[in-house]
Length: 77
Image (tube, rainbow, N blue to C red; front, side, top):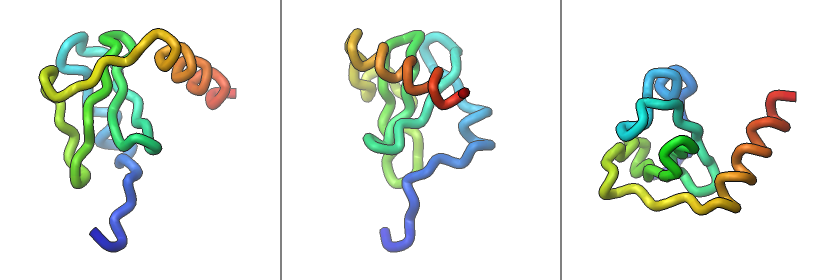
């Protein structure tokens, strides 16, 4: 879609929670997905719509989860 930015609306992101753990989700712009570190799942975002179904999520491995944690820590400053 022309002009569509894959960035997630920060206000929407504040409202969304992981459907499995009810924990926070982090947006991964590079893969256009929402990550739940507590559930170790990545939920796709298709055409700007988060697909928060456990059966649609991909598992997040140990090394990926650790790099996401480190990136979040360094982003906080």
